[in-house]
Amino acid sequence: METATIVLFGATGDLAKRKIYPALYNLFVEQKLPQAFHIIGLGRRSLSDEAFQDSVAQSVARFSRREANDPELLNSFLSAFRYNVLDVGRKEDYAKLLQRIEQREQELAVQPNRMFYLSVAPEFFAAIAANIKESGLGSAAGWKRLLIEKPFGHNLQSARELNRQLSEAFSEDEIFRIDHYLGKPMVQKLGVLQQNNPVLDALWTSRYIANVQITANETVGVEERAAYYDRAGAVRDMFQNHMLQLLMMLAIHLPKNGTSEEVRLKKKRVMEALVPMSKHEVSGQVIRGQYAAGTVLGSSVPGYTSEPGIDALSVNDTFIAAKLQIDAPFWRGVPFYIRTGKRMKEKSTRIVVEFKAPLEQRAAAYEDNPAPNLLVFEMSPDEGITLQLNTRDPQREGEFKPIRLDFHSSREDLPEAYENLLHDAWLGNPTFFAHWDEVELSWQWVEPILQAFEENLVPLRLYPAGTYGPAESDALLAQDGYHWWFDA
Ligand code: BG6
Image 1 (spheres, rainbow, N blue to C red):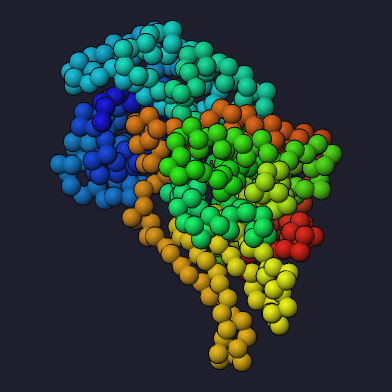
Image 2: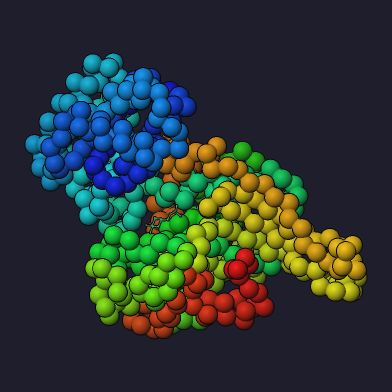
Protein backbone atom coordinates (compact mmCIF):
# COMPACT_ATOMS: atom_id res chain seq x y z
CA MET A 1 0.00 0.00 0.00
CA GLU A 2 1.32 3.43 -0.91
CA THR A 3 2.26 5.84 1.84
CA ALA A 4 0.62 9.25 1.96
CA THR A 5 -0.06 12.20 4.21
CA ILE A 6 -3.59 12.91 5.33
CA VAL A 7 -4.14 16.63 5.63
CA LEU A 8 -7.31 17.08 7.63
CA PHE A 9 -9.06 20.45 7.60
CA GLY A 10 -11.48 20.76 10.52
CA ALA A 11 -9.46 18.52 12.82
CA THR A 12 -11.14 19.74 15.99
CA GLY A 13 -14.65 19.45 14.55
CA ASP A 14 -17.45 17.12 15.46
CA LEU A 15 -17.25 14.90 12.40
CA ALA A 16 -13.53 14.29 12.90
CA LYS A 17 -14.11 13.28 16.50
CA ARG A 18 -17.15 11.12 15.98
CA LYS A 19 -16.32 9.47 12.70
CA ILE A 20 -12.90 10.11 11.19
CA TYR A 21 -10.56 9.31 14.11
CA PRO A 22 -12.49 6.21 15.21
CA ALA A 23 -12.54 5.00 11.60
CA LEU A 24 -8.79 5.55 11.22
CA TYR A 25 -8.18 3.73 14.49
CA ASN A 26 -10.19 0.71 13.37
CA LEU A 27 -8.32 0.63 10.08
CA PHE A 28 -5.04 0.90 11.97
CA VAL A 29 -5.93 -1.99 14.29
CA GLU A 30 -6.93 -4.09 11.30
CA GLN A 31 -3.68 -3.17 9.57
CA LYS A 32 -5.44 -1.60 6.66
CA LEU A 33 -3.32 1.54 6.77
CA PRO A 34 0.25 1.74 5.55
CA GLN A 35 2.97 1.44 8.19
CA ALA A 36 4.10 5.03 7.86
CA PHE A 37 0.58 6.39 8.01
CA HIS A 38 0.54 9.94 9.34
CA ILE A 39 -1.83 12.82 9.53
CA ILE A 40 -1.64 16.55 9.96
CA GLY A 41 -4.72 18.02 11.60
CA LEU A 42 -5.61 21.64 10.90
CA GLY A 43 -7.74 24.04 12.85
CA ARG A 44 -8.08 27.69 13.63
CA ARG A 45 -7.23 27.54 17.30
CA SER A 46 -3.75 26.80 18.47
CA LEU A 47 -3.14 23.40 19.99
CA SER A 48 0.00 21.45 20.79
CA ASP A 49 0.60 18.11 19.12
CA GLU A 50 0.19 16.45 22.54
CA ALA A 51 -3.14 18.12 23.23
CA PHE A 52 -4.32 17.12 19.77
CA GLN A 53 -3.26 13.53 20.33
CA ASP A 54 -5.12 13.54 23.66
CA SER A 55 -8.31 14.67 21.99
CA VAL A 56 -7.91 11.97 19.33
CA ALA A 57 -7.43 9.39 22.10
CA GLN A 58 -10.65 10.56 23.74
CA SER A 59 -12.62 10.33 20.56
CA VAL A 60 -11.29 6.83 19.90
CA ALA A 61 -12.17 5.73 23.44
CA ARG A 62 -15.65 7.13 23.08
CA PHE A 63 -16.68 6.33 19.53
CA SER A 64 -14.52 3.57 18.16
CA ARG A 65 -15.96 0.15 17.34
CA ARG A 66 -12.74 -1.45 18.54
CA GLU A 67 -11.72 -1.09 22.14
CA ALA A 68 -8.63 1.00 22.72
CA ASN A 69 -7.32 -1.20 25.52
CA ASP A 70 -3.81 -1.86 24.27
CA PRO A 71 -1.76 1.21 25.31
CA GLU A 72 1.15 0.32 23.05
CA LEU A 73 -1.06 0.02 20.01
CA LEU A 74 -2.93 3.19 20.89
CA ASN A 75 0.29 5.15 21.39
CA SER A 76 1.68 3.98 18.13
CA PHE A 77 -1.54 5.15 16.45
CA LEU A 78 -1.47 8.52 18.20
CA SER A 79 2.16 9.15 17.31
CA ALA A 80 1.01 9.56 13.70
CA PHE A 81 -0.91 12.73 14.56
CA ARG A 82 0.44 16.26 14.28
CA TYR A 83 -1.39 19.55 14.52
CA ASN A 84 -0.99 22.85 12.66
CA VAL A 85 -2.85 26.11 13.07
CA LEU A 86 -4.40 27.24 9.84
CA ASP A 87 -6.80 30.00 8.94
CA VAL A 88 -8.37 28.80 5.69
CA GLY A 89 -8.17 32.30 4.17
CA ARG A 90 -4.51 33.05 5.04
CA LYS A 91 -2.05 32.23 2.33
CA GLU A 92 0.95 32.33 4.70
CA ASP A 93 -0.59 29.49 6.68
CA TYR A 94 -0.57 27.28 3.60
CA ALA A 95 3.08 28.06 2.96
CA LYS A 96 3.93 27.02 6.53
CA LEU A 97 1.84 23.91 6.15
CA LEU A 98 3.73 22.95 3.03
CA GLN A 99 7.02 23.19 4.93
CA ARG A 100 5.72 21.04 7.73
CA ILE A 101 4.40 18.39 5.38
CA GLU A 102 7.67 18.23 3.44
CA GLN A 103 9.58 17.94 6.68
CA ARG A 104 7.38 15.06 7.87
CA GLU A 105 7.60 13.35 4.50
CA GLN A 106 11.37 13.40 4.81
CA GLU A 107 11.48 12.29 8.44
CA LEU A 108 9.19 9.36 7.77
CA ALA A 109 10.44 8.62 4.26
CA VAL A 110 6.88 8.90 3.04
CA GLN A 111 6.01 9.34 -0.64
CA PRO A 112 4.71 12.82 -1.50
CA ASN A 113 1.14 11.58 -1.90
CA ARG A 114 -1.38 13.86 -0.22
CA MET A 115 -4.95 13.33 0.73
CA PHE A 116 -6.71 16.59 1.58
CA TYR A 117 -9.79 15.92 3.64
CA LEU A 118 -12.16 18.89 3.96
CA SER A 119 -14.20 18.26 7.08
CA VAL A 120 -15.30 21.88 7.24
CA ALA A 121 -18.36 23.94 6.34
CA PRO A 122 -18.97 23.93 2.56
CA GLU A 123 -18.51 27.68 2.20
CA PHE A 124 -14.77 27.06 2.68
CA PHE A 125 -14.39 24.31 0.06
CA ALA A 126 -13.58 26.54 -2.89
CA ALA A 127 -11.13 28.80 -1.04
CA ILE A 128 -9.26 25.84 0.41
CA ALA A 129 -8.99 24.09 -2.96
CA ALA A 130 -7.68 27.29 -4.57
CA ASN A 131 -5.13 27.81 -1.79
CA ILE A 132 -3.95 24.22 -2.03
CA LYS A 133 -3.22 24.86 -5.66
CA GLU A 134 -1.63 28.28 -5.29
CA SER A 135 0.58 27.34 -2.36
CA GLY A 136 2.07 24.39 -4.21
CA LEU A 137 0.65 21.95 -1.65
CA GLY A 138 -0.99 20.07 -4.45
CA SER A 139 1.91 19.97 -6.84
CA ALA A 140 4.19 17.38 -5.28
CA ALA A 141 5.53 14.54 -7.40
CA GLY A 142 3.05 12.04 -5.95
CA TRP A 143 -0.72 11.88 -6.26
CA LYS A 144 -3.18 14.25 -4.64
CA ARG A 145 -6.78 13.62 -3.67
CA LEU A 146 -9.54 15.81 -2.33
CA LEU A 147 -12.13 14.32 0.01
CA ILE A 148 -15.16 16.45 0.66
CA GLU A 149 -18.24 16.06 2.75
CA LYS A 150 -21.75 16.99 1.74
CA PRO A 151 -23.58 19.24 1.17
CA PHE A 152 -22.24 19.66 -2.33
CA GLY A 153 -23.99 22.90 -3.20
CA HIS A 154 -27.31 24.30 -2.11
CA ASN A 155 -29.05 23.83 -5.45
CA LEU A 156 -28.15 22.99 -9.03
CA GLN A 157 -26.58 26.33 -9.79
CA SER A 158 -24.42 26.55 -6.68
CA ALA A 159 -23.37 22.90 -7.07
CA ARG A 160 -22.22 23.64 -10.63
CA GLU A 161 -20.35 26.71 -9.46
CA LEU A 162 -18.65 24.77 -6.67
CA ASN A 163 -17.69 22.03 -9.05
CA ARG A 164 -16.23 24.56 -11.46
CA GLN A 165 -14.15 26.08 -8.66
CA LEU A 166 -12.92 22.73 -7.38
CA SER A 167 -12.03 21.54 -10.84
CA GLU A 168 -9.59 24.41 -11.22
CA ALA A 169 -7.44 22.74 -8.59
CA PHE A 170 -8.40 19.05 -8.83
CA SER A 171 -9.48 16.84 -11.69
CA GLU A 172 -12.62 14.71 -11.43
CA ASP A 173 -10.64 11.57 -10.69
CA GLU A 174 -8.90 13.37 -7.82
CA ILE A 175 -12.16 14.44 -6.17
CA PHE A 176 -13.75 11.97 -3.75
CA ARG A 177 -17.21 13.26 -2.81
CA ILE A 178 -18.30 11.54 0.34
CA ASP A 179 -21.86 10.34 0.69
CA HIS A 180 -21.55 8.24 3.80
CA TYR A 181 -24.53 6.10 2.80
CA LEU A 182 -22.36 4.70 0.02
CA GLY A 183 -19.91 3.55 2.69
CA LYS A 184 -22.49 1.45 4.51
CA PRO A 185 -21.67 -2.23 4.04
CA MET A 186 -25.20 -3.21 3.01
CA VAL A 187 -25.40 -0.42 0.45
CA GLN A 188 -22.12 -1.60 -1.04
CA LYS A 189 -23.60 -5.09 -1.38
CA LEU A 190 -26.76 -4.05 -3.19
CA GLY A 191 -25.56 -4.21 -6.78
CA VAL A 192 -23.44 -7.27 -6.14
CA LEU A 193 -26.24 -9.32 -4.59
CA GLN A 194 -28.44 -9.13 -7.61
CA GLN A 195 -25.56 -9.74 -9.97
CA ASN A 196 -24.20 -12.81 -8.16
CA ASN A 197 -27.47 -14.53 -7.37
CA PRO A 198 -29.27 -15.87 -10.41
CA VAL A 199 -32.42 -16.18 -8.30
CA LEU A 200 -32.46 -12.43 -7.76
CA ASP A 201 -31.07 -11.59 -11.14
CA ALA A 202 -33.93 -13.41 -12.83
CA LEU A 203 -36.53 -11.52 -10.83
CA TRP A 204 -34.93 -8.10 -10.99
CA THR A 205 -37.37 -6.66 -13.52
CA SER A 206 -40.71 -4.93 -13.73
CA ARG A 207 -42.27 -8.26 -14.71
CA TYR A 208 -41.95 -9.49 -11.14
CA ILE A 209 -41.41 -6.43 -8.99
CA ALA A 210 -44.49 -4.48 -7.92
CA ASN A 211 -42.79 -1.57 -6.20
CA VAL A 212 -39.69 -0.55 -4.27
CA GLN A 213 -39.84 1.33 -0.97
CA ILE A 214 -36.83 3.19 0.36
CA THR A 215 -37.08 4.50 3.89
CA ALA A 216 -34.66 6.42 6.09
CA ASN A 217 -36.46 7.28 9.30
CA GLU A 218 -34.68 8.99 12.15
CA THR A 219 -35.78 9.59 15.73
CA VAL A 220 -33.53 12.59 16.23
CA GLY A 221 -34.80 16.10 15.55
CA VAL A 222 -32.86 19.07 14.28
CA GLU A 223 -30.25 18.61 17.05
CA GLU A 224 -27.75 21.50 17.34
CA ARG A 225 -27.79 22.20 13.63
CA ALA A 226 -30.65 24.69 13.40
CA ALA A 227 -28.79 27.21 11.24
CA TYR A 228 -27.82 24.62 8.65
CA TYR A 229 -30.93 22.46 8.77
CA ASP A 230 -33.49 25.23 8.55
CA ARG A 231 -31.97 26.24 5.22
CA ALA A 232 -31.50 22.69 3.99
CA GLY A 233 -34.58 20.70 4.98
CA ALA A 234 -35.02 17.01 4.37
CA VAL A 235 -34.79 17.44 0.58
CA ARG A 236 -31.26 18.79 0.63
CA ASP A 237 -30.07 17.07 3.78
CA MET A 238 -31.11 13.51 2.90
CA PHE A 239 -33.09 13.21 -0.31
CA GLN A 240 -30.87 14.78 -2.96
CA ASN A 241 -27.89 12.73 -1.81
CA HIS A 242 -28.42 9.68 0.43
CA MET A 243 -31.88 8.69 -0.78
CA LEU A 244 -31.15 9.06 -4.47
CA GLN A 245 -27.90 7.18 -3.99
CA LEU A 246 -29.85 4.31 -2.43
CA LEU A 247 -32.20 4.35 -5.41
CA MET A 248 -29.28 4.26 -7.86
CA MET A 249 -27.56 1.43 -6.02
CA LEU A 250 -30.73 -0.64 -5.96
CA ALA A 251 -31.71 0.03 -9.55
CA ILE A 252 -28.40 -0.54 -11.34
CA HIS A 253 -27.94 -3.74 -13.24
CA LEU A 254 -24.25 -4.47 -13.12
CA PRO A 255 -22.27 -6.69 -15.38
CA LYS A 256 -20.20 -9.35 -13.58
CA ASN A 257 -17.13 -7.84 -11.93
CA GLY A 258 -18.15 -4.36 -13.04
CA THR A 259 -15.40 -1.78 -12.79
CA SER A 260 -15.86 1.44 -10.90
CA GLU A 261 -16.40 3.23 -14.22
CA GLU A 262 -19.19 0.81 -15.06
CA VAL A 263 -20.83 1.21 -11.67
CA ARG A 264 -20.80 4.97 -12.03
CA LEU A 265 -21.94 4.88 -15.62
CA LYS A 266 -24.89 2.65 -14.71
CA LYS A 267 -25.79 4.93 -11.83
CA LYS A 268 -25.73 7.86 -14.18
CA ARG A 269 -28.04 5.98 -16.56
CA VAL A 270 -30.51 5.43 -13.71
CA MET A 271 -30.53 9.14 -12.92
CA GLU A 272 -30.95 10.02 -16.58
CA ALA A 273 -33.94 7.70 -16.77
CA LEU A 274 -35.63 9.14 -13.71
CA VAL A 275 -38.85 10.70 -15.00
CA PRO A 276 -38.64 14.45 -14.36
CA MET A 277 -41.49 16.51 -12.96
CA SER A 278 -42.38 20.12 -13.42
CA LYS A 279 -42.81 22.21 -10.29
CA HIS A 280 -46.57 22.09 -10.85
CA GLU A 281 -46.56 18.30 -10.78
CA VAL A 282 -44.70 18.10 -7.48
CA SER A 283 -47.76 18.27 -5.25
CA GLY A 284 -49.16 15.10 -6.86
CA GLN A 285 -46.01 13.08 -6.21
CA VAL A 286 -44.32 14.56 -3.20
CA ILE A 287 -45.43 14.94 0.40
CA ARG A 288 -43.83 17.71 2.40
CA GLY A 289 -43.96 17.35 6.18
CA GLN A 290 -42.77 19.00 9.37
CA TYR A 291 -42.83 17.50 12.84
CA ALA A 292 -45.09 18.88 15.52
CA ALA A 293 -44.71 18.16 19.25
CA GLY A 294 -45.07 14.53 20.24
CA THR A 295 -43.48 11.60 21.99
CA VAL A 296 -40.43 9.85 20.63
CA LEU A 297 -39.12 6.69 22.29
CA GLY A 298 -41.04 7.54 25.45
CA SER A 299 -39.95 11.20 25.76
CA SER A 300 -41.97 14.29 24.96
CA VAL A 301 -40.28 16.46 22.40
CA PRO A 302 -41.13 19.93 21.06
CA GLY A 303 -42.35 20.62 17.56
CA TYR A 304 -39.86 21.78 14.94
CA THR A 305 -40.81 25.45 15.16
CA SER A 306 -40.24 25.40 18.94
CA GLU A 307 -36.72 24.04 18.60
CA PRO A 308 -33.92 26.41 19.66
CA GLY A 309 -32.70 28.48 16.74
CA ILE A 310 -35.69 27.73 14.50
CA ASP A 311 -37.99 30.52 13.40
CA ALA A 312 -41.47 30.06 14.87
CA LEU A 313 -42.90 30.54 11.36
CA SER A 314 -40.50 28.22 9.57
CA VAL A 315 -42.06 26.13 6.82
CA ASN A 316 -38.96 23.98 6.42
CA ASP A 317 -39.47 20.32 5.56
CA THR A 318 -38.34 17.71 8.08
CA PHE A 319 -40.05 14.93 6.15
CA ILE A 320 -40.41 14.12 2.52
CA ALA A 321 -42.07 11.22 0.76
CA ALA A 322 -42.02 10.92 -3.01
CA LYS A 323 -43.06 8.63 -5.82
CA LEU A 324 -40.49 8.22 -8.57
CA GLN A 325 -40.49 6.38 -11.87
CA ILE A 326 -37.54 5.10 -13.84
CA ASP A 327 -38.16 5.11 -17.55
CA ALA A 328 -35.85 2.23 -18.46
CA PRO A 329 -36.62 -1.28 -19.71
CA PHE A 330 -36.11 -3.09 -16.40
CA TRP A 331 -38.08 -0.64 -14.29
CA ARG A 332 -40.80 0.82 -16.47
CA GLY A 333 -44.05 0.81 -14.50
CA VAL A 334 -42.46 0.05 -11.12
CA PRO A 335 -43.04 2.88 -8.66
CA PHE A 336 -40.18 3.73 -6.31
CA TYR A 337 -41.46 5.27 -3.10
CA ILE A 338 -38.93 7.14 -1.04
CA ARG A 339 -39.38 8.71 2.35
CA THR A 340 -37.17 10.20 4.99
CA GLY A 341 -37.96 12.14 8.11
CA LYS A 342 -36.75 13.41 11.45
CA ARG A 343 -38.52 12.62 14.72
CA MET A 344 -40.11 9.49 13.39
CA LYS A 345 -41.22 6.57 15.47
CA GLU A 346 -38.02 4.61 15.10
CA LYS A 347 -34.59 4.74 13.51
CA SER A 348 -34.70 2.54 10.45
CA THR A 349 -33.06 2.64 7.07
CA ARG A 350 -34.28 -0.03 4.71
CA ILE A 351 -35.26 -0.93 1.21
CA VAL A 352 -38.23 -3.18 0.62
CA VAL A 353 -38.68 -4.82 -2.76
CA GLU A 354 -42.29 -5.96 -3.03
CA PHE A 355 -42.91 -8.65 -5.60
CA LYS A 356 -46.04 -8.88 -7.65
CA ALA A 357 -48.94 -11.05 -6.63
CA PRO A 358 -49.16 -14.33 -8.58
CA LEU A 359 -49.26 -13.79 -12.30
CA GLU A 360 -52.75 -13.48 -13.59
CA GLN A 361 -53.02 -16.81 -15.33
CA ARG A 362 -52.01 -18.59 -12.15
CA ALA A 363 -54.17 -16.49 -9.87
CA ALA A 364 -57.04 -18.93 -10.07
CA ALA A 365 -54.91 -21.48 -8.25
CA TYR A 366 -54.85 -19.26 -5.17
CA GLU A 367 -58.17 -19.48 -3.38
CA ASP A 368 -57.13 -16.96 -0.76
CA ASN A 369 -54.61 -14.17 -0.86
CA PRO A 370 -51.10 -14.86 0.31
CA ALA A 371 -48.96 -11.92 1.34
CA PRO A 372 -46.63 -10.71 -1.38
CA ASN A 373 -43.05 -11.89 -1.36
CA LEU A 374 -40.77 -9.24 0.03
CA LEU A 375 -37.05 -8.83 -0.14
CA VAL A 376 -35.85 -6.48 2.57
CA PHE A 377 -32.42 -4.89 2.86
CA GLU A 378 -31.80 -3.33 6.23
CA MET A 379 -29.03 -0.83 6.76
CA SER A 380 -29.94 0.49 10.16
CA PRO A 381 -30.16 -0.05 13.09
CA ASP A 382 -28.98 -3.57 12.23
CA GLU A 383 -27.77 -4.83 8.93
CA GLY A 384 -29.60 -7.68 7.33
CA ILE A 385 -31.44 -9.23 4.44
CA THR A 386 -34.82 -10.87 4.79
CA LEU A 387 -36.85 -12.76 2.26
CA GLN A 388 -40.51 -13.15 3.04
CA LEU A 389 -42.16 -16.23 1.56
CA ASN A 390 -45.55 -17.85 2.08
CA THR A 391 -46.32 -21.22 3.48
CA ARG A 392 -49.38 -23.01 4.79
CA ASP A 393 -50.01 -22.93 8.49
CA PRO A 394 -51.07 -26.44 9.57
CA GLN A 395 -52.29 -25.13 12.91
CA ARG A 396 -54.74 -22.74 11.30
CA GLU A 397 -56.49 -24.93 8.79
CA GLY A 398 -53.85 -24.46 6.20
CA GLU A 399 -54.13 -20.68 5.98
CA PHE A 400 -51.27 -18.90 4.33
CA LYS A 401 -48.61 -17.72 6.69
CA PRO A 402 -45.65 -15.54 5.78
CA ILE A 403 -42.29 -16.85 6.94
CA ARG A 404 -39.01 -14.97 6.85
CA LEU A 405 -35.60 -16.17 5.82
CA ASP A 406 -33.36 -13.92 7.76
CA PHE A 407 -29.72 -13.00 7.68
CA HIS A 408 -28.38 -10.44 10.11
CA SER A 409 -24.83 -9.31 10.89
CA SER A 410 -23.79 -8.06 14.25
CA ARG A 411 -22.74 -4.45 14.23
CA GLU A 412 -19.39 -5.06 15.92
CA ASP A 413 -18.27 -7.24 13.02
CA LEU A 414 -19.03 -4.66 10.40
CA PRO A 415 -16.84 -1.79 9.32
CA GLU A 416 -18.33 1.65 9.76
CA ALA A 417 -19.13 3.61 6.61
CA TYR A 418 -16.17 5.92 7.18
CA GLU A 419 -13.77 3.00 7.46
CA ASN A 420 -14.80 1.72 4.08
CA LEU A 421 -14.63 5.15 2.54
CA LEU A 422 -11.26 6.15 3.97
CA HIS A 423 -9.79 2.85 2.97
CA ASP A 424 -11.11 3.16 -0.58
CA ALA A 425 -9.91 6.75 -0.87
CA TRP A 426 -6.49 5.62 0.21
CA LEU A 427 -6.45 2.96 -2.46
CA GLY A 428 -7.77 5.46 -4.98
CA ASN A 429 -10.92 3.43 -5.58
CA PRO A 430 -13.76 5.83 -6.46
CA THR A 431 -16.58 3.25 -6.77
CA PHE A 432 -18.41 4.34 -3.64
CA PHE A 433 -17.96 8.07 -3.98
CA ALA A 434 -20.43 10.32 -5.76
CA HIS A 435 -19.31 11.24 -9.25
CA TRP A 436 -20.08 14.78 -10.39
CA ASP A 437 -22.53 13.46 -13.00
CA GLU A 438 -24.63 11.83 -10.28
CA VAL A 439 -24.53 14.92 -8.12
CA GLU A 440 -25.52 17.18 -10.97
CA LEU A 441 -28.33 14.93 -12.17
CA SER A 442 -29.62 14.59 -8.60
CA TRP A 443 -29.78 18.34 -8.15
CA GLN A 444 -31.42 18.66 -11.53
CA TRP A 445 -34.09 16.16 -10.52
CA VAL A 446 -34.86 17.76 -7.15
CA GLU A 447 -34.78 21.33 -8.46
CA PRO A 448 -38.56 21.48 -9.21
CA ILE A 449 -39.23 20.18 -5.68
CA LEU A 450 -37.12 22.95 -4.20
CA GLN A 451 -38.95 25.50 -6.32
CA ALA A 452 -42.37 24.10 -5.50
CA PHE A 453 -41.59 24.16 -1.77
CA GLU A 454 -40.20 27.66 -2.01
CA GLU A 455 -43.28 28.91 -3.82
CA ASN A 456 -45.54 27.01 -1.45
CA LEU A 457 -47.11 25.00 -4.25
CA VAL A 458 -47.09 21.95 -1.99
CA PRO A 459 -48.95 22.08 1.32
CA LEU A 460 -46.85 21.58 4.44
CA ARG A 461 -48.30 18.68 6.44
CA LEU A 462 -47.63 18.57 10.15
CA TYR A 463 -47.10 15.18 11.76
CA PRO A 464 -46.78 14.44 15.46
CA ALA A 465 -43.23 13.54 16.46
CA GLY A 466 -42.97 9.80 17.09
CA THR A 467 -45.12 8.73 14.13
CA TYR A 468 -44.41 7.60 10.58
CA GLY A 469 -45.02 11.04 9.11
CA PRO A 470 -48.16 12.67 7.72
CA ALA A 471 -51.16 10.57 6.70
CA GLU A 472 -50.70 11.87 3.14
CA SER A 473 -47.55 9.77 2.91
CA ASP A 474 -49.68 6.64 3.38
CA ALA A 475 -52.18 7.94 0.85
CA LEU A 476 -49.39 8.32 -1.73
CA LEU A 477 -49.04 4.53 -1.77
CA ALA A 478 -52.68 3.74 -1.10
CA GLN A 479 -53.72 5.39 -4.36
CA ASP A 480 -51.66 2.74 -6.16
CA GLY A 481 -53.01 -0.05 -3.95
CA TYR A 482 -49.89 -0.36 -1.75
CA HIS A 483 -48.83 0.54 1.76
CA TRP A 484 -45.53 1.15 3.53
CA TRP A 485 -44.27 -2.10 4.93
CA PHE A 486 -43.30 -2.57 8.56
CA ASP A 487 -44.85 0.58 10.01
CA ALA A 488 -45.91 -0.80 13.36
C1 BG6 B 1 -26.46 13.14 7.49
C2 BG6 B 1 -27.52 14.18 7.69
O1 BG6 B 1 -25.91 13.24 6.22
O2 BG6 B 1 -27.02 11.84 7.66
C3 BG6 B 1 -28.14 14.05 9.07
O3 BG6 B 1 -26.95 15.47 7.55
C4 BG6 B 1 -28.63 12.65 9.30
O4 BG6 B 1 -29.20 14.97 9.24
C5 BG6 B 1 -27.56 11.62 8.96
O5 BG6 B 1 -28.99 12.54 10.66
C6 BG6 B 1 -28.14 10.22 8.99
O6 BG6 B 1 -27.12 9.28 8.86
P1 BG6 B 1 -27.28 7.80 9.41
O7 BG6 B 1 -26.04 7.11 8.98
O8 BG6 B 1 -27.42 7.91 10.90
O9 BG6 B 1 -28.53 7.24 8.81
